[in-house]
Length: 562
Image (tube, rainbow, N blue to C red; front, side, top):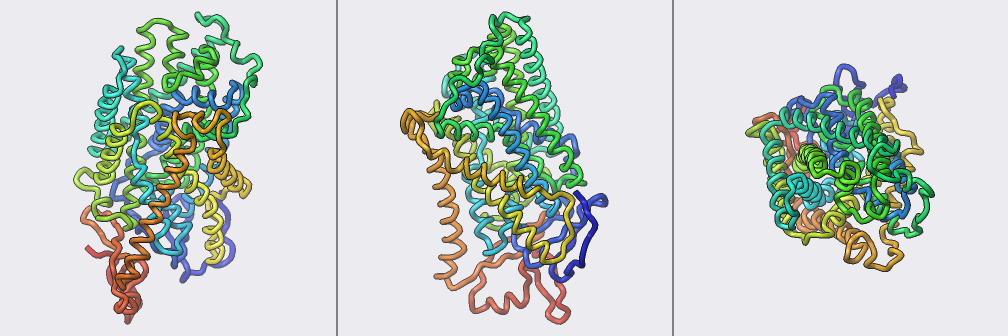
């Protein structure tokens, strides 16, 4: 949404950047210069075209959710009709959240990392709490164990091998290791592979959708394909916890629509590209999800779906085709889809962790920011791999998938609420500096809707299930993931308080940031301890970014410390 510039821009109050020849300038408040430095030339290159934008989002959304979540969602809501309604609600909610990301993108087109970059810009004061809290929780939850486990299960089903806990874990570690190696070796080829697998998974869902229509037409061995659609809302639950948990799962299944925003600084014309192709990818996935669910309900008895756990798609293949060969072939396609999902996830996660490191709030920021030796973020890839392997091996089998999926969603809802609220603060600051209307502005009603849904997702999971505190979708206390999620946020806040507030107070020093430029062109901040006795002199000779200022001319002497 573009508009003519009205009023005058306060040049001293803001910095002006241009993302591309086709985009409007980006105005940033001059006082808001804390956080990761802007890399106007991406050290990771520009390998992300519009095709990669589509399939980074599609591949992360279409991973294991549509093949595994329908049973858990049906169990939570109680009826086929409400289950389908929830998939529609999930699409509307994802679309509302997408508009938040698009508006932030229009303001900060050079910043990859999505949430980590936008939260930093929305809440610049006080300095460091938001970057620190988000960075710590991102590190603690930077793993993809759930999808790795589902991938290994489908590989074993396709191979006709018995699924034992340690076979699943061992294969999951091997598969994720392969994904990490591909991501480390080459951004260009990892994106090409992600795109190719994205095509396969879209075609897989198209095949399932068409097969579902054939089933509904009565042309398969399924005896009564319309059974689940008669009185489709019969059995709808009044269990608030089940409804909330189901919405969490639907939201998780659509998770990934924001994945392309983690790599926007690797897109040559990010605003115009994502403004069109990000909503397109979300809509494609929504249509495929709906047809896939209709196919499942047409072919599989309701009770079988309720108890299917993570293998709903396998039940569908068995019900329709019967033969082991067909089930094996289609289970292999689901496994390929899951592998592509992991690849898209690891690409996005590596950029998020890299941006956290570039803010300076993680130790050894040069390690996180560096793109050597393969022109890829090696440090973030290694961290993601280590944490994923630990989480694959450590938790007991059984409830791990549901628990981890819910756990990762809970802090994400907190940050999404803050991210949406923060847009109002960014808008207010832009008005104060006379910046013109950006290329995309979300409706206020959409922002309010987004915040309300996030509040719902944060509050309703605490309502006990109808069957008691152990009747949730895990065998232990139903709200354990909420408690653990809040504990992670508390730990993250404690790290900020300790490193930025308590230790400096008793050590008689103040934290300041210093800009560093690496040989590969990457830039990062490093937090340094300035003795309070030298603080006035430091602030007089440096700007907030840590650049040295010539006292005679008032100009920056050097833009980076090498």
